[in-house]
Length: 201
Ligand SMILES: [Zn+2]
Ligand SMILES: [Zn+2]
Image (cartoon, rainbow, N blue to C red; front, side, top):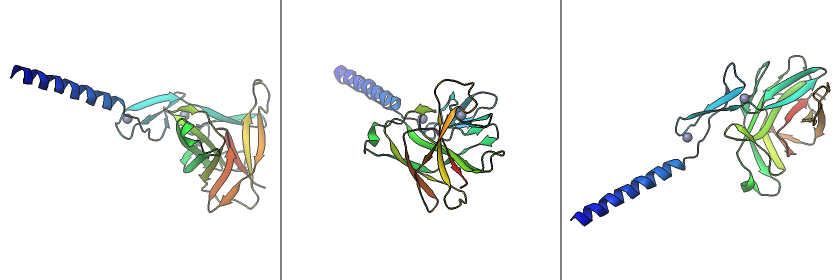
């Protein structure tokens, strides 16, 4: 009898240990990232377990003449408001989607810069891992849903930061990108998390 009790006790301990290790394997599913007011961080709540986490904001920048605008790639916050999460997908062009870390996230806004009416829309595609940047492992075909009326022949421009000199008044390179535009969905190829802008023709 004693032996059976001991065995049962051992079994109980084993089951408890299993339950604990299963709980450890919980992968958080973060809801939307929102700015923590008064800080340079954003936070999100796990939609599964309710835990919250904060992470540093990570900005994409664009310079107009001598005015530099920084937009957080994850919570969308910037000096004139906030970019909102938009629907989108990213597919690795070499088919190796499984090597990509993080989840795809895009934030965007129509007419985002009051002083630049020619910028019809701007968005930032990226992969986020726990609120921080996960670099693109592969060149991707990205499709994003754009909620804006766009004229024929608009330009899609990628704003790539230049290494080094911050004193430079135009520190980014603007590159025109090929795209397709169908039923409100913009599709293009990139390997960069930088700001992309749709500019009036
Ligand atoms: Zn969780
Ligand atoms: Zn942020």
